[in-house]
Structures are given as structure tokens and as C-alpha cells.
Length: 371
Image (tube, rainbow, N blue to C red; front, side, top):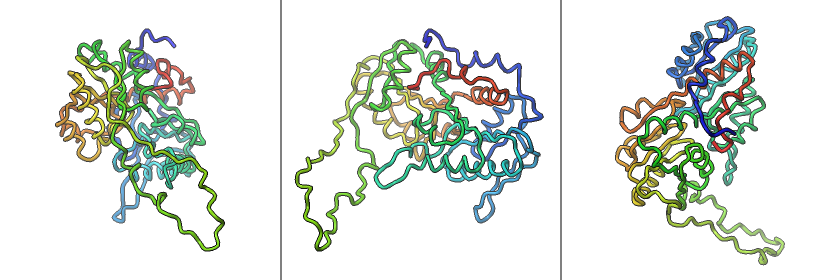
């Protein structure tokens, strides 16, 4: 891979001379991201289709598609927000409405896939992401466009093609153009699990990395689920033969520590999602103690749940940079440290290429598997 240069936005802008024909394409959107849908429509010079999505007094979701979609390519723009259950139902009903109305193809543009963090089996839970994928495919989706999945293996849950776009070129461009003296920065992984992403960023920016190791236990790991309770031993049961098993040592994380030198440097924490920000705030405090004089947090998706704006405002974090995959205008009004990077041009180009049956490899030219 050529790592000498990357031009995420400029390289895409040259292709908008050939916008898709408006006669055979329909853009629809739900209530999750109307601003992003309008941006995409304006870049493609396509008006959003006449689709009304509303809720009845009993909270049932109703979808009314005003324009004909028979024989057309339908693109449904719907992201995940804090109201993720309604977002999913709106998407499913819109997709099924297009399917039963004889649409030629139904492509879902889901910048942030809801429930993507529940992609692994936890205790007696379930892999919810696979359930969501099956529901979407059964509703009639023929293609999915998304961005920075929490785990890339999620693509295998779908029975239709999935294009997992990357926001890293836009965030790298922000670092280069908007962080003064970024050459004095160090890319920080908030935990060892995100070290590969941090390494990918650092290599393309020619910077060093640091890894924060050890932290408080996650809340879901501390839940008592009954596994350690003594089992009921029925009478006449076969005698216990497990006395020879080796003892299982409980996993314990060491005290929080920073592996790498951040003294007198700008610390740039990179991740895919910012939801509950307490762990980022704790990481920023540790970096500040180790001598970092400025701390930035960059992520693709900014859910910023609960009282995240207040915690960010009161923390040692200087700036939080997220893309507009999830609407966060209210959070920005509550916290001046939150900045936005527009990625609508990437989603627009993906729609244009799919509709014109062009290769998607150009959009992955300057990204790595670790992004």
C-alpha cells in the first residue's frame, strides 16, 4: 500500500460530473438523520423521495411512500441513534414497503449500525448483531452500505453484500489541517484492543504511539449471573469427578498505566465509537498526569449518551472530533469542545458507484484492514 499521501475528499470530488440518472433512483430516509440525507441528496443532485415515517398514538411505526418505486433502485438512509429500536423498525418497514412495491433493488445506507457492539456471545446472552442482520435481509435489503463497523466480521452476518466504508482518511486529514504542531503528537490507544487502529493512524502520519493498559472492570463483567452459585445436587447423582481439574484464575486488570512516552506531547486518542465518555475522561486524566499538554479524542461515531457533554466540558480533554454519522447537534450546543467532520461526500460517492455499477475499490485505496 502506498502510504506517501492520501487525499480523501479531493480525490472524490472529481467524480461528481457523472451523477446518477434521477429517473431510476429513489432516495428515502427515516427520522434518524434527515440532515445527512439532505446533504447526500444535494451532492447527488437528487431530491429525497416522498416518504413519510411517523408513529401512531399507540407507538406503531407507519410508513407511507408517496412516489412510485416500481423497477427502481431504492436507497434508504437510516442511521442508529439513541432511539435505536425505532430506527431499526423504521428501516425494516421502509425496506419491506419497497420490496412489496416491486422495487428493483433496495440498498440500506446505515452510517452507524445499531447493536454493533453486541456482536459476541456474552455469558447467557445472544449475538444481537446477527439477529439484526437477518431481520434486515428478510425485510428485503439487497445491499448494505455502512461505516466503521465495531468488528469487521459483522459483514459475515448479512446474506447480502456489505460495503464497510472507513472514515480514517477524513480524520487523518483533520489531524493534519486542524491540530497545530501535529508533528509533536502521539497516537494513543485507549486500551490494547484498539492498538492496531492506533498503529495504522500513527504509521500514516509518521508519529509514535502509546497504549493505555489496565483499567477498571467493565460493568457487564461484574454482574452476578449465577455461575458461581453452588449447583443443586440431586439425590443419587453420580459422584463428583471434577476434583482433578486445574483451578481457573480470575482475570484481573493491572492498575492503569501508559505504555509509551507522552510527556510534552499532544495526545490523540483514536477509537471507532464514543458513547459513554467516562473511560475517555479517565484516560485523559492519566495522560495529563504523564505530561501530555493537549488531548484530542477522535472517533467515527459520536453517540455521546447520557451526560457526555457535561463530562467532556469538565474534563482534561481539549477537543472531541466525530463525524456526522450520528446527529449530535444538541450535544454540540451543550459542549463547545465537540467538533464535526462531514463524511456525506463518501456516502454519496458510494451510492453513485453502486448505482453506476462501478468498482468500490477506489474508496478503500488509502485505508488499511486495521482502520
